[in-house]
Amino acid sequence: MKKVLDLAIAAAIAGSAQAGTINFTTTAAPTSDLDKRTILHSQIAVVDGKPVRLNYNTILRSGDAPKGSAMPFGTVIDKSGKKIRAADGSVFVSSDNDFSSKQATDGERPPACGCET
Image (tube, rainbow, N blue to C red; front, top):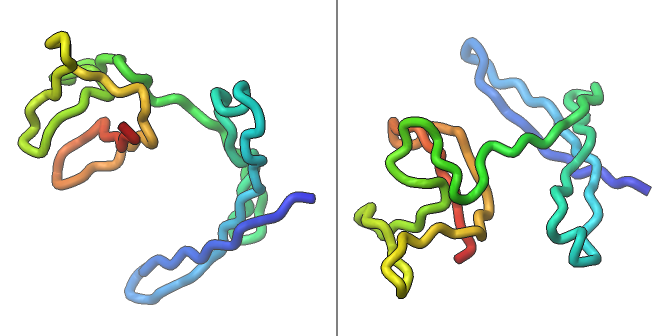
């Protein structure tokens, strides 16, 4: 039996607030080593009562070097932006990315990621 998670979405449009709903089909928790290495995601969202098929698209993988990027994706940096180096002196690139985003932050364009390193 599939459960849905109800979320409320609010948006201010032309000075008035409107609310809608979005529900996602559940995704089973991984139970095997293979499951843990497989991309699992909701297949369908229901937006304001209408089903919408969802696809998962890989944006970047660790070590990918997007055009114009100063460093490979997943490069771990300190709070001042200096690259962290491994014991052998190489630049440390995390393979433990928790999420990726194309959303602009502080006026800059990512790629940005959060790592569980």
